[in-house]
Image (cartoon, rainbow, N blue to C red; front, side, top):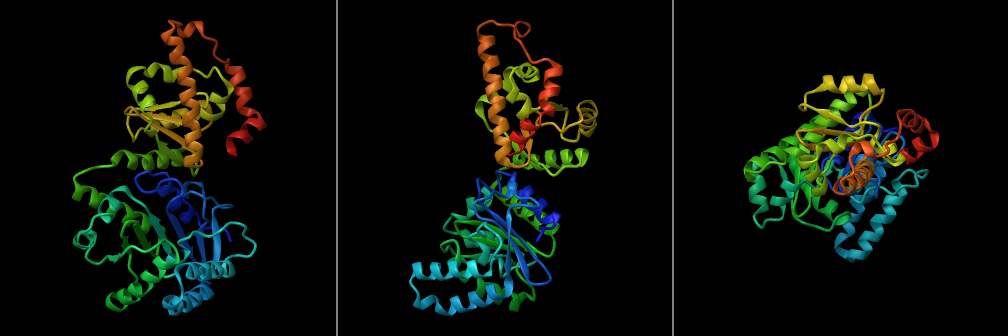
Length: 365
């Protein structure tokens, strides 16, 4: 089953945001009208999902029936036996043709609305690990659901299920916002757009409560949306937190503007980076498109460095190559070697490298 575009877009939106998820954490899902659920596969990051990868199809009816049975057996089973039974259930209800393993939180998603996003936000967990966590979240969101800590997987799902049932009886609808002690946030709604809106709203509200801001991470979404709108793509952006790059952008910005001297710099970073005057500077982005016919891999705005790629993993590879490129230039500068005394790759060679199928493949893998 091909995942809907808005599920992919929602997943990538969260996956590029370090303030929301880290490494392979977090998961997303979508339920179809015919009783199937697409859930993010285990071991893949939210930023890596796409139309052909990243999701596993689950048959909801037997999954929910099996969870009801496990709920009745919970008291009589040892923890290890419960997890084993849950694993067997998961393998029975997943798409038999899928080699990927469904997320460990598949059981959680079974009880919730059409679109669901589970994140491990910095500010959410700042409160979720406090002893008075429930009081804090209830004060901020009185109609939210607060679930005490349980081991991830089947135990957490069985802790959630009766609370969802009680919530529906009390409110006449499924909960949209769920806080998990020592764990994170779940947002579930009828549309992906509503899930995104609520996730951002919760994040900003808690930031305001804590009197802090992680706004720079939020700017990754702004960069991605601009790139995708101008170039017709579905990329993510990654904000560099590298101390060395931060120092160089402050003290040696002209080095960033030098052409590649090494093939990998071209392959990963592109022939030129893009400098924006502000985060609404789509005119400069359109000019870049006209001049180079391709999207920028490296974008600098207000001395913040963003890397644009298919996933955060690929963006970090671009960051590594740029660091290598700049490190070589810095050593030469400290040796009093002027840029005019360095041999950079000629434009003709850059165009040839950019067109090589082998290099395109290497960048895409």
